[in-house]
Image 1 (cartoon, rainbow, N blue to C red):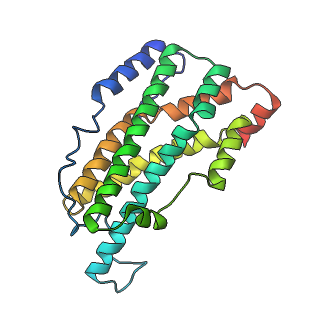
Image 2 (image 1 turned 90 degrees about the horizontal axis):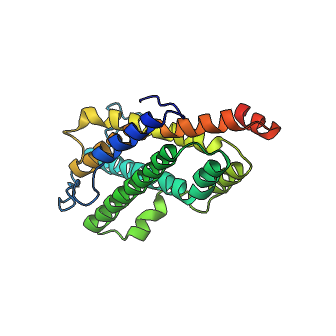
Amino acid sequence: MKILSLYDEAALADQLAFQRKNCWDLETAIHWDTAIDLQKPLVPLDEDALFFPGASSEERLAVSQLLGLIIATAICEMEECLVRLRSVAFEKILKKHPVSPEFSELGEQFFIEEIKHSQAFRRYLKLFANQTGIELKDLELVLPKILNTKTESLLKNNLESGGHAFWWIVAEVEQEFLLLYNTISPFKVDVEPLYFDLHRKHFEEEARHASYPYMVLELLITRGKGPRDYFHSKS
């Protein structure tokens, strides 16, 4: 992850140009016309089957596919939460602590990429449901949700009070996404090809923009001078 300075406009502009040059297109970069290989797992499982001792190959396949769908949904939900809270998590902060047009534009690109990632994994979930003959709304009943939860409400309240919790979570999640791809990557030949390709594309852009949440945190920590700001920076 490249370390950028909040106030180095030239470096921020170069980073923005780099991300725009290398970004992938949702419609053309993914082979959406390729059928999902339902005989392949979505994520590798521990060979020792610590949580499912004695599981058959069919059961292991089902567990792997469910875990893969949960991961895909978690990516969608977390990135959609980021977008829903954009006004208070991004626009309000930059209005209170203006930096530069370059920093704002880099943030705009960050959100554009996150929206695209969510759309990509949502499309995969829909394809998986259609190919298996499962109603998407039924599948979603067993998948995680953030929308309208107490967790999302707490994060919004923390942001509105000047808290940093949301951006710490974003920074942490971005790193987990990178770790996730590195965990799946050694098993490329074994996992479902379209699912792997999505994670590879996701990894590429997450790696390029992973520094942005840390810059937002730096902005909050260094520019907030009141007692409440001090409390949030420590807590």
